[in-house]
Length: 241
Image (cartoon, rainbow, N blue to C red; front, side, top):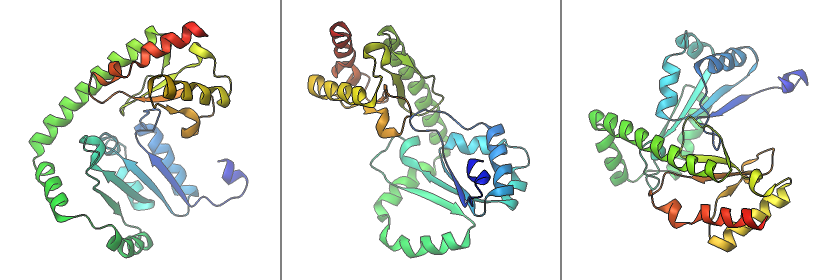
């Protein structure tokens, strides 16, 4: 709306869902508002980078078929996150935007997916029963791991954002050592690197407006967080502060 007020032309809206690093999910009501805004003001289209959960939300939006007729929607979907196969870089793009289709056709020659990779992906995607079981179990395990890691972080005095999806913890380290500036945030980041050889992404790298926030992945092997000694290092740092 700020751009509209300044008489700028809004050509497209890009939505990434779940949000990285916050782990927020766009609700059906919010998406409906965005689609209504797009129909009135956006000259080109909306691009949606999504997960399976996001696609299910779209199915529950009232009059979704009407929005599909009125605005240009482009869907980007990759299987690596939902199926925990980071090395299998394969996905799909669905769009009815002819200029974008023509552009993708020209570029696709440089992005060919090897047939063995496509065959591997097709084999498990075609097994719908297995996919449903896997996604259900995976969601259960992620929820348990999120709670386990978040509870431990809270015991250390860290603030934890209650994420709805994803596999990151968005942690507020200010209660430990302040981080009143991004310079302090970088100092703490370097402390973790030097003291424990730990790399957790500082908020500044993710365009966080407030210093002191870090992104921690919790979805790896259950022992990895303990092996990294991150909470021991934090406790030691807290004592020093």
